[in-house]
Length: 485
Image (cartoon, rainbow, N blue to C red; front, side, top):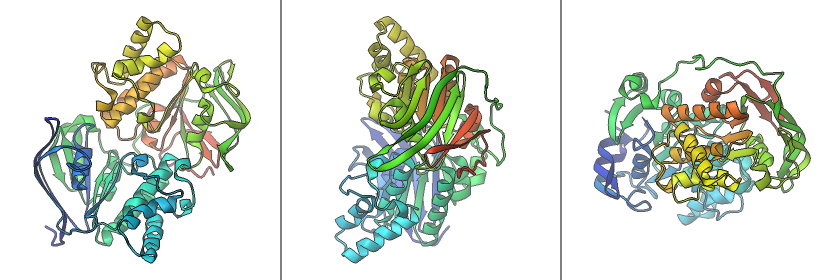
């Protein structure tokens, strides 16, 4: 056992929300200089364990805790936490990224020179120095994730707790993140990381703990533990060796299919900043395409512009036989659907069924027809039987699938999903793939993703976006060059 001093000692007999036990019989010690990975199926209790380790449970987040959570090294604060949804991390007290990152050190009443050093060092470690003067609300999801990490690092806590920190990072950024975490470990930091990317945990963690239904299923060396997961709990999926082929055969682009989406010379951006620059693209009927590229390349902006949430400055957008260029959002919703990175931004009904029915009803479907379409969509994404639940009571991963079902139920000709697999286990990824196959039969779809394994398994080919324009269209590969060369 390591002789390094402990940054976390956790002994939990149980943790419960409103009488529902979500963690039981947890005993974890993390010394300085160790990276501990937490894996498990959706609903296993991983995020609850993370917020407990960070000292937030029972304070910022109400819960009944039977046991002890100690941070023997103390510190101010003793732990820093990075949420799975990076927008949750933002205080919006700063107008720029560097001002946002400075909020924590400023609240610690540190001298100005130390605050400056903390901010600069944290931005550098998070590979976010180039974002320092940007406005946070104009950043992509992946860029926000780097800012959230920098904000946590600026606190200089002895324990860093990360919940799905690479979910919205492109592969190169994820590799840079892993290197930064190794550097922090070598400096003596303790790191607890919740992650569905088993390959990342195998390469990064010193020890892996697998949870199932609130309890520890397995613990030990990463490769030993992760290699045994499928027989222990198939919901989590399996560790893939490098070079494993995708689950579905590649389809050649259907040159003779009728175009569903046609974009010509599209330009768009925010204020003075141009994001899309003379972008042209065609997607045919029956295609499911992955939109890939570096964080900030313009993928999400492209989806928002098609949906009408960002105004086009030049160019044309057509879906089927409809020219969308000048249409308002509510008219585009008849033929286009978009599911955001953060599903909470589009969930507002009292029940799951009402949420899935809202789109069809708004578009003029009778209540009976809307209910039938909603139930079909909910069944496809694995939410059959949860119709009476409140959307806010669902796990974030289930909320994401509900948002997909809500859009799918409206039967758009073209459906766009932004980072749909973030935080999903193997079972959830299977449901999302089924939703895409249903959409394929009705029109076409685009998946904005950094999850190249899912893209390889579920999509026909990739469209690489670089610097706001299409730089490459071709086969999906785990070795895809995001530079567009």
